[in-house]
Image (tube, rainbow, N blue to C red; front, side, top):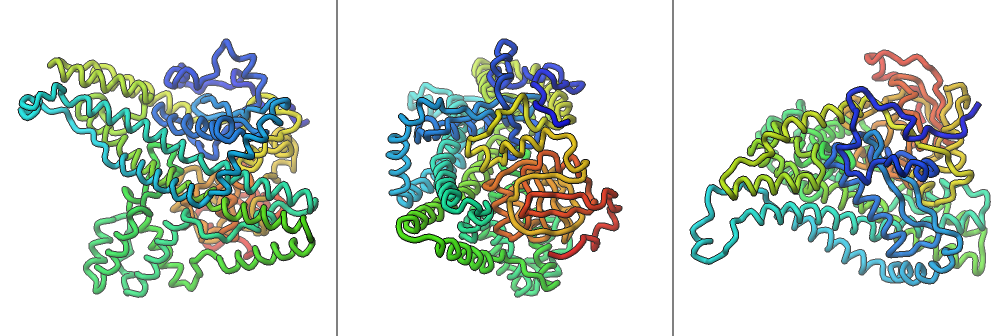
Amino acid sequence: MPLSSFPKPSDLTVPAGAEGWEKIYPYYLAFQPDQLSGDDDKFWFCDSQHWPTVFRPFETITGEYSVKCLGQFNARHLLIPNANGIEFRVHLGYLYMSPIPVPAEKIADRVPHFEERAGYYFQNWQPLLDKWYGKVKDTIRELEGLTFDKLPDMVPIEDIRSGKSKDGSEVLLENYDRLILLCYQAYQYHFEFLNLGYIAYLDFFTFCKQVFPDIPEQSIAAMVQGVDMELFRPDDELKKLAILARELGLESAFGNTADVEGTLGAIRGLPRGDEWIAAYEGAHDPWFNFTVGNGMYGHDKYWIEHQGIPLGYIRDYIQRLANGHEIRRPIEDLIAERERIKTEYRELLEGEALDTFNAKLALAETAYPYVENHNFYIEHWTMSVFWRKVRELSRMLKEEGFWPDEDGIFYLGRNELRDALFDLVTGWGVGAEPVGPSYWPAEVERRRGIVDALKTQRPQIALNTPPVEITEPFTSMLYGITTEQVNTWLSDDEGGGNVLRGMAASPGAVEGRARVISSPDELDQVQEGEILVASVTAPSWGPIFGKIKATVTDIGGMMSHAAIVCREYNLPAVTGTGTASTTIRTGQLLRVDGSTGVVEIVDETAAPEDALVGAHGHGR
């Protein structure tokens, strides 16, 4: 029989070795014992779409700032009539969310404020967006200028002669405070336009559903597809570099791209190799500030620091070109399909209804690109610089004996780190040893053990009893959490375990062998023609989308990154299945129908690893 509720937080078992886990995070992130009755009455879902792995203490900064700043634009800036912000907690290391409803009696009061505020943005979209780009780039430049230098043995004589009266340690403290505030500033900028992009699309979506009750959701999404988005620019740069390498006859230099210096040296040694190197280095700023993760964790690998990753993608593109494959996104096909669908539905309308359709579509087309473009500027470019500066600070503290490894900083909360810095400058200032080197190494290792233990247990899809109806539009659109999908998650007999149901996120039906990916580090295992199965995908997996047949994810709605990227690559996708990445095994034969949201395990026996290449099922 289907279940009626998910587990309560207190029902979940703490993994062995993770006892006391809640003490490594800020108190306000944990479910508190004296608030359990209220928290247990709320429905919480795990946001594994953005935070698929356990937080180390410092990394909660991205979850806290993201969800807080998302909420402020709903509840305080725009006063969206039917949507406030989202409560959030960390439980057993994972982030859970609970949308906050707007009381019915307050909705009408918010409408005129929303119309005035959102209307101003929509009427002045481009100049405000141009200003946004300037603000974000200024933030990045300021982040790049921060330094965390070792404190000197003595104050420079020039400071004595000038009467400066400060010892320089204030610069270290100010730079750290500024680092944190700039991160906060970036996340406020992040959401300035994002919710408006969703609102414009949702407004068009709602209108289409009213005038065309039977219109497929994918047809609505197709009417804004095929647009030029900067999020695809890093991948496009790699494709251009692959094409250039073939034109210049440099293919032989890409034999072992894991050896970055060896590869670049081999290219320089070939005729016209310097021409390619100039193009390669020209792409670095800003497009190599791109991570195979999602920018939310300190362990995410950015191309600019791990150049074996982009070089490997270029090598794959060179090989695909040599095999006669088309490596470009099918833009012309997407645009043709977009225009066909728009024309088809326009012909069904006339008069005021047609004018309204055109106006709402035009607004959605204007705002839609930001839904993905912001991701490059914040999660990728800004956070690339932010995490580099955090590691720079960590290296300085490592040299001062605060921890033995460069990643030690991630096991402190950001406010604890401020205390550690003051400990350092106090000891330095008075000529004594700081306390940190005798305290933090053991504490960091203890916390590392807790985090490692938490990683052994996957998060719950959701917690507590879901509402009878889930009506909050952003939850459905971004996460794929609908009443129907939650009921599917609760069901224990759907399809006998061989059928999974999720969001019909990108149309098409294929069969192929599964490749289950649990980490971006495993992306090099993906073979041509496989079906990618993951808890969540990242927009930066673009080079992989050129190889696979379809995508299946645990979480995500029609406007999730996975759904949008798959539509732009003309790949079938089923998102929001809840358990695909833990149910399906690599090598199993799947049938994925992105038009209906159904994934079927056709053959439960996983093929041997060495048999996977060349055994990927039927073509599309």
